[in-house]
Every structure is written in C-alpha cells, then in structure tokens.
Length: 590
Image: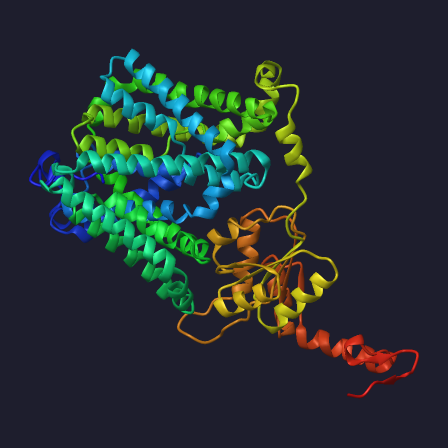
C-alpha cells in the first residue's frame, strides 16, 4: 500500500503545506468536503475534454497535495480511506481470478499476454537505463509501462460499443493476463517487504511464511466448502451479500498486514475466495462505484509525496516514456497478434486500446517509494506518464478506426498471409442470445420457456437466487444480478440481442420507491443497446411514461391475457395445452 512507514513522518501534509482556514485545518470532515468539491469540479472539466475519471483524480491529488492547495492536514483519516480504496480495488481483481476463467484463456492466450508484458517491460527498462535511471528504478518503470488499465479499457470500449467486438475480447484477454502478473508482483513485493518497516515491523520470516500458508489454506477451504452455500444464503438479501464481501476483504487485508504479508495480498486473496461463486458479477458491479469513490483518496495520498516543482525536470523523460507506451506498446501487441494469425486491423485496434499505463502501475510505484526502492522524483515521473498516456489513449480509442484507415498502407508488416485465428473467430460469430429477459418470476419464466420452444436463444437475469436456480433447472442460460444496476447491465453480452424484456415487478412500498422498468430501459440505452425494449405494466396509464423512458413496447399481462381469452372464446379455437382436438370439435376431459 502506498503509505508512509510507521515511525516516519506522521504528517507530511501538515509539515509542508501553507496554512489553511481554521474551520478546514481543524476539521477532517471539512477537508473531505473540500476534496469532493474539488474532485467534482476537476471531474466535470475532464468530462468536457472527454477524459476518463482517473485523469481527474490524479490531477486532484496533485492540486490538493502539499505542493498545491494543501487541502488536507489530517493524513491518517485520508490514508485510511486510501487503504480501503486499494483493498477494494485488489479485491475486485481477485474476484475475476477464478480457476475456470484462467483455464478458458488457453495456453496461446496466456503465453501471448506474458510475452506482451515481458517485451514491453524489457523495452521500458532499456529506455529507462538510457535515460540514466539505476537498474532497480528502471525495473519498476519497465513494469509500470507494461500494464494497461482494465477500468479505462472496459469503460472506453463499452462507450464505443466495441467491448464485444473481436479486438475488444482480445484486449480483455491481455488484461486478464496482466491481472495475473499483478498478483505475482504483489506477492513478490510482499516477500521483499518481510521484516521491513513497509509491513509495520521486524516480523520473523518463518512466522510470515507460516501465516501466509495458513491464509492460503483458509482461502482454499473456504472456496471448497463455504463460499457457494454461504453466498447463496446471503444473496437472499443483496445488501447483506455486499456487506459480507467488504467485510471479508477488509478482514483478510487486516490479517495479512498484521502478520507482515501486506494488505495488498490480503485483499487479493479475499477476492479469490469469492471468485468461483455465481454471485461474483453482482458483487463486482455493486462495489465498482465504491472503488471509484475511494480511489480519489488514494490519488490524494499519492499527491502528498510528489513535489510539483520536481515534475518540471521529469517532463523530457516522461515524454520519451509516453511515446514508448503510446507507440511502442501497440507495435508490440500488433507483432504478437500477427504471429498468432490475427489481421493487422485487429492488432492495431487492440494495441491502441492497451496504449496507457494502469492504476496498478501507480500502486506498484507507490509501494516501491514506500519501501525505499524509488525516489519521490521517480514516483512523480511515473504519475506524469500515467496522466499523459491515459489522456492521449482516450482520444486514440475514440478515433481508432480513423487511425487505422490512415496507417493501413504502412501496416502490412504486421499481417501474415494466413489469418486462421481470425477466420475461426469470424466463423464463430453469431453465437449469443436473441432475447435478454429481466425478471424470472411466473410471467417471465412462461415467456422464456415459450421463446425457447420456438428456437429463440434467451438469457435470463434475476436477483433472486431461487429464481436463478429454477431457470438453471429448466436448462436456460441465466445471470445473477441487479437489473437496475447500470454497471452490471453494461457487462452483459448485449451485442446481437434483438429484444430486452423486463418483467421486473414495481414495488411501491418502502422508504424509497423507484421504477425498476425505467432504470432498466435507461441503463440499456446508456450501455449502447441497439435492440428493442419491452416492459410490463398493470396500468394502461403508464404506457406513455414508459415509452418516453425508452421502452418500445409495453406489455399488459392481464389485458393481453383477457384479449386472448376473448379471441379464443369467440373464435372457437382453444390452445393445444387444453387438450382440444380440432377434428373432434370438443375438449378432451381428464
């Protein structure tokens, strides 16, 4: 974690900062309020410039730090929020690392991801040495530029409606491998920190190793015997499930810190403990906003140790390293994908998507600075490279297709004549679902079964574990998640879906009343869904309001059933399920 060693400077904010008004300097609540106001203002400016939120957060950290406005004097409270943010971030990384997902990568994908990190880190290391950095600092810089930001890539590709495109899926494969390497790096740094002030004191190596083995054994037993039944029970109350997930992350992080392993490893293992459960997607989508909020305080803490005046001297080196990230990394990705049999277009679009450094680069650099491996100037350099590459890559991703059209004549080197891998991928397109059905009660289940009987591919979504089990029992595809959660909906396989149908009931009791049907329609449109949306209503007066919210069709179950009943009674033809034999002209009894 990017925290000061115990026993060191207890208040770097206060010791280097100009005086603040008394109502802020003596009130941590006022300091947090000032930070949030500043973050909102800088974030709004960043949104006008089409920049990811992480760029605004880094800027807030630098502005609010002691070399800027020095808005924070109570470092302990801000550091606590920062530690919570990193714990949740690493918990979400661990949450993606289930054994099934790792196996699904395949050996070639795993090796290509490792090759990308190794090649980019080697290039960055060589450039850093050429710029005059010592070998250890060069190693940190090399790995810092090798990682790409999962948060930014997923967000920007989703905005471009390309997360389900081939280059989007290939980019996600690289990111998963990078997350695995981050896990290894965290473990390695934890091992290096054993017995140092980074982990709070001179713990003995045998004790730390024994504690680590015990923690791994606990996680393995939890996954084997407790994870699925416990989350199944907790999922009946979604808020309790999320509270348990946070508690597990903080508990294991605190234990790992206490025994000298570091909070980073504890947070990761807590995520791994829940990664194999069917509720991980729902947990991840619910915790993502909390992660984004708490990461603000990480960047404020990061800014506390960076002198703005020292950044000026780092600009030339930052520009050189940014070119390595923005140009060198895409070229490396293109070369690897070309060797694997992908076309140059897929290679360029994938490389452009990965052309930035990650939030984990800053975390690793912060740990290196805390452990004494990096100077504050080097930490500031990596932070500056992060701001430049993240800002530039957002525009590169937005205009990636135009960039490819411009560079196409120069990219022949990166494509082989045979593109068997991409031809196979093209042949596999078209698989997926025709209809996504939100709400798996009696009406939703009846619709799903009838659609399947007519050859329609249906994906069901519900936040009720019993309904999810019932759908699996029918042999239907199903996801556990909140239909009104925009983060969850954005990660659904929406590409190629023709209809999204919501049969989610409206609950008009409780302290807070919100129309889930409107939330579903708005979340689908925000995620770039281009199909039609149908919602249910028991009141005819709601039809216009629901259509104004984005629904294309309003189903009225009672009215529609009554209309069909009248048609049957007048037309004289009964449904087959009633046992009517049109030739006999009567209803079979029994």
